[in-house]
Image 1 (cartoon, rainbow, N blue to C red):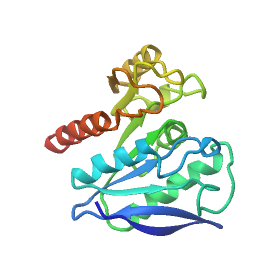
Image 2 (cartoon, rainbow, N blue to C red):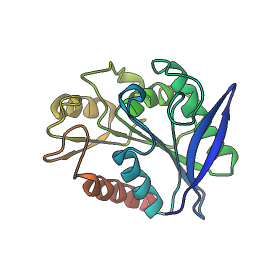
Image 3 (cartoon, rainbow, N blue to C red):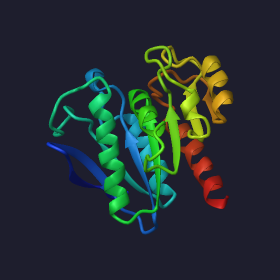
Image 4 (cartoon, helix red, strand yellow):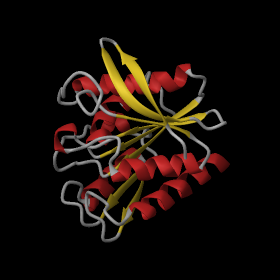
Length: 206
């Protein structure tokens, strides 16, 4: 799926991104893992998510948080990174897309949680992959009915699946657990693609 490199203005910063433009009116913003731990838009899970959305005819925008790659600025402990997500979502919205998905992996899910908890966020649906609940604190009540799908591995030390299962029930989110997968999903990327495509196909039907 062809992607083009673009730059998104975010106040005084510039955010580096890759845009795949499909023919429909749906899009997805995809967020990478921790900026200080090697996370970037070229992460294997981010690429799997991009493949799944694009395969279902959905435009995709994956980007580097501030301070990563060619994105200007510096890491700001999730505060400024929320602004980066807003900028990405608004970019797709102003480009004419009517339905915009949010997909966040690990740190990207945690930052995204702070965005979708707000009433005026630009996203129609949210997918969290391996939200690091043993590393960051998640405030679940404001996320009720705002996350449609969560995916994790049954060997993830940052995101133990049993507590995540309890959280998913409280917020009415579907949880899919991948056997043998840890936090990094090495060798499990295709399973991620299949799970997300199945969800998107059902979403399209409904």
